[in-house]
Length: 316
Length: 253
Image 1 (cartoon, rainbow over the protein chains, first blue to last red):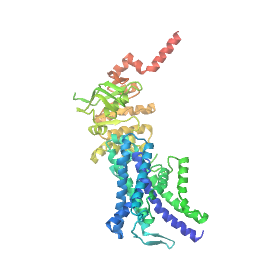
Image 2 (image 1 turned 45 degrees about the horizontal axis):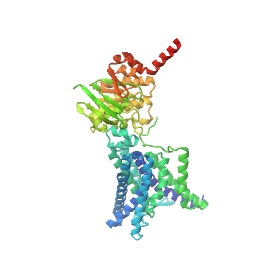
Image 3 (image 1 turned 90 degrees about the horizontal axis):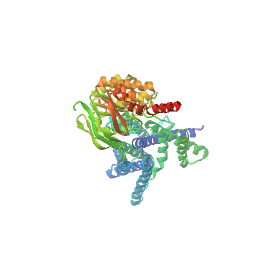
Image 4 (image 1 turned 30 degrees about the vertical axis):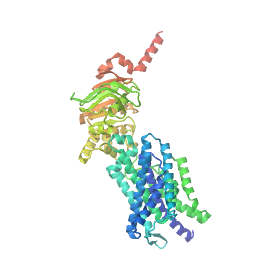
C-alpha cells in the first residue's frame, strides 16, 4: 500500500468520524420522534437544512462574523430554528392528525407533505433573495490545522464538532438515565398508555421530544454547513443515511447513534477506496447506505445494533 | 357508607355507543379483597376500565373514598389513590425494574417516600430487588406480573384494580402470585378489586365476589355462597358440566 493510499484512508477516516457522528445525532433525533410519537418522520431532513440556514441568519443578523461569539450565535440560531420548526410541524399537523386517530401510514404521508412544503418554501424564499442564498456556507472560518504525528492533518473545527457530538450524546445519556423527565420520555416511548396512567403528562413529554430532536437536527445542519456548502435540498439528501442508521439501530437510542457513526465511516472510507482503485466517483456513495438498508431489512429487520441504554441495558 | 372505599351505582359503560356493562352497583369495603368473576366476554375487564375511566361512562356514578370520580380522568384517579394494573402491556419493557417502579411513583416528589414505597414493594416481591437493574421486557412472565403489581403499589394506593393478573401464567406461578395478594393486604392495608378467570381460585382468596354475566351483576356474596348455588355452578363449570351431563344421557339411552 502506497503512502498516498494511507494518507487518503486516514483522511477519509477523520472525515468519517465527523460525518458519522453527525449522522448519528440526526438518527438519534429521528429515533426519538419515532419512539415517542410513532411517526416515521420524513420531514426530519428539513430541520437539518433549516438549522444550517438558522445559523447563517443568526450570524448575518447580528453582524458578528468573527471569533467564538459568532460560533455560539450560529449554534443558538441553528438549534433554535431546528427545534422551532420541528415543534411547529407537530403542533400544526401531526398532533391534530393523531388526535383524529391517524395511523402510521397517514402520518408518514403527512410527513412527506410537510417535508415538501418546508423544502420548497425555503427554496422559494432563497430564490427571492436573488439567488444569493440558494447555496450558503457558514461564513465564519474559525479553525486552524492540527497535524497528527506528521501523517495526517485535521482542523480544529473537526475536533470541535466531534467534541460537541460527544457532549450532546453524554448529556442525552444523562438526561435519559438520571433525570425524571428523561426516564418519563423513555417510559412514554416504551408504553404510552401506561405512562399516562402513571400520571406522566405525555403531551409535555411529546413537546420536549420534538424540541430535542429538532435541536439535534439543527445542530447537525450547523456543523455540516461549516464544512460544506448547504442548499435547500441538503437535508433531504442526507435523509437516506439517517433512515438507514435508525433502521440499522432498530430505532433504539444508542443503536442509532452508533449505526450513524459506522455508516459515516463506511461512506468516506469505501468511497475513497472505490474512487482510488476503480475510479468510481463519490457521487455514488449513497449506494453504500442503500446496500446497508437492504441487507438489514432482508436479514434483520428489527435492527442490527439494538442498544437502548449503555449502562442499564442488562439483558438476561 | 364511610367504610366503603369504592362503590358504583347503576353504572353503564362501553367503547362506542353500545353499553358493555349495564346497571352495575357494587362496592368494596376498606381492607377487603373482592373478586369479579364470570364467563368469558361477560364484561369483567370492561367494568374495571369503566370504574378507572379508561372507557366511557354512559350512566351511573363511581364514588371513590367519599368523592364522586365518575368523570375523573385515569391519571387524576391515580393521584387520588386508585391504582390500576391492565391485563396486558402493564410494564415498561424498555425500562429497568427499578425505573419501572420509579415511574409508578411519578407523581410523588418526595425521594424518601419513593424509597419507602420501593422498600415495601421489594419486601412483598423479594425477586424484584435482585432483578432491579434488569430490563422489564426480559423478565419471565410471572416476574413481569409481579413488576406490574409492584409498579401500581408505588403510589401507596387505597384501592388496587387488578385485571386478570394470572392470565397466561402456569397454574403453579398463578397460585404463587395470588397467594401474594394476602401479603399485599396485610403489609399495606390496601383494598383490592380483582378480575379473575378462574372462579374457584379467585373466590378462595377473596372476602366477597360478584358474578357478572352479559354485563350485569347476577349474584354476589362470599365464596361459599356463590359456589354453593347450583344455578351458578352450571354457569362456571358451564361447558364441561353440561357436556358431561349430555354424554351421560346419551350413554343412558
